[in-house]
Image 1 (cartoon, one colour):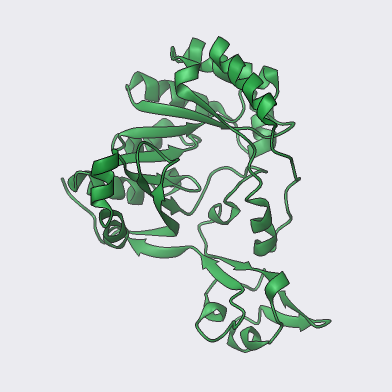
Image 2 (cartoon, rainbow, N blue to C red):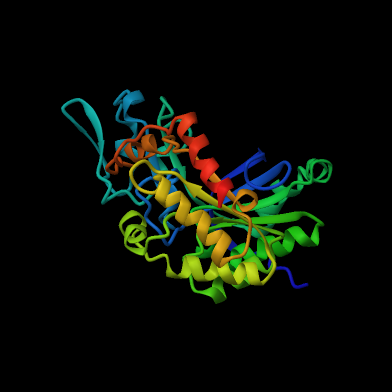
Length: 302
């Protein structure tokens, strides 16, 4: 097996001791880039391949040190408050260097890393993987945006005897999805909306590739788990959930209760939009436990 240890990818987080991104205890590597623009995205900083400056304005002391450090003149003080011109900001990280922001309100999300650099962190928990049945999970964004880097990481993990999993949207043509998932032991796959028009409205893209690739992955006998993030008023009605479970049963020939996980709405990403200087999405409330039970009963009945 040819390994590409010097291949460079754009990474925005490496999370150790993950227990929700595949079997056992895992290290989840979050890559930059996504083909979708979901209105409820929990990781909006992942959507662009470029580094993103996250800024906690409510904790800023407006000391002005960042104004002098920024090579692009993106920082200024207006009416006593520090303001960032996002069109000028390139995410270079000059304002995040030690000693610049004394209140530590700034962080760059996204940096280039080689396969070798990522694997140094992944292999440090090798014994945890063996004891728990865990391993490496590659998420995002959508790791299919960086197919060569993703495949190289998966191959490197297998070379070390580490189990692999990918979390993908399936929104690319089959050849790209195939090239990535053939190196994955498990696939976690998003099914957001069965209705194509609703899918376009919510994510900015058609679900055509999503549904076709789901069928191909099942035909390829991949160990696959489908996930539906439930968004109030978008895809969490009885009819929506029934349609998703029905697709898994009727089109894929799988048991929905064994292969579909409904994820209650999570608002942890809402604050991130503000830190990015972007418009915050519509705020929603998490579904009640009683309603989630009803939706899961529908899945079990299909």
